[in-house]
Length: 330
Image (cartoon, rainbow, N blue to C red; front, side):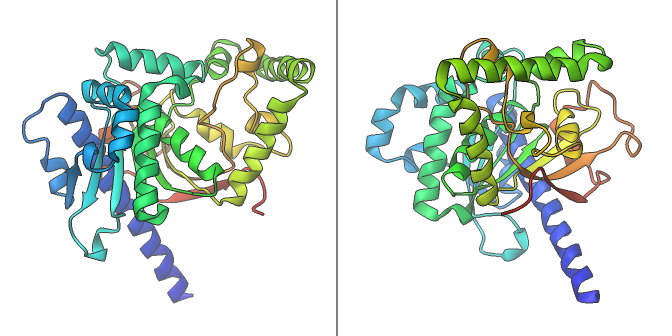
């Protein structure tokens, strides 16, 4: 019993250390984009160095994705970091891709947020170049040595790319701060009285299934079901850092803590996009996760600061991670 307790404590300590390290790497990307002084100290203090994208991608990839590379160069969304020490005490992986979130003054950031709402983030050049970079790192170093982390918009696109890889049985470790659960259907539900929410769910799901059956032989629904099963078989557990005060991400708590995929198809099938006749790629639907949650009763945090990354760097934020599963593990 003592041994098991120590092992659990060691695991929790490792996760808290990773939260601290990865949060600082993302902060560094924010400060680099905003040209803050000494922004490099965010990652050098964590014993990481920033690696140029040109040294990650092949010449062929650089030529093929040159437009997406220019896009990334203009917007500075993410950085590739390499650990500079062999000490296991760092508790972090050798390679980390850190992705910043939204800067409200940037038009392209607002455009990508619009894509989140309409579940079309897969159409962004950010997704294109991030996907290429993460795949190259995995091919070179193995998925066990690579981690992806991001905040807000960065969490959304990081989840999207990692979800794709998990569907290929390549479960890359991911740590995502304040990941938005803010697609159109969830936003509409916030405007509908709670008593009508079950009705809106049923209507959305019913219309989407009818459209799926009539126009594509129900392939969209069946594909979503197969993907959910594949993600479960891959044992992909992204780490989600969710603040209950944060209206942009707190729907994850209801999503994971109430009901199962066996009882609610909306856990794996996003119905709203299919109502308005376009195909999308969901980043927010997966069967398993580790939730690190800030609860209302534990911390007094204002709604205007609840979405801030800096909260997760505080030492008084709980370190307990809840393992949540929407279906039985295969």
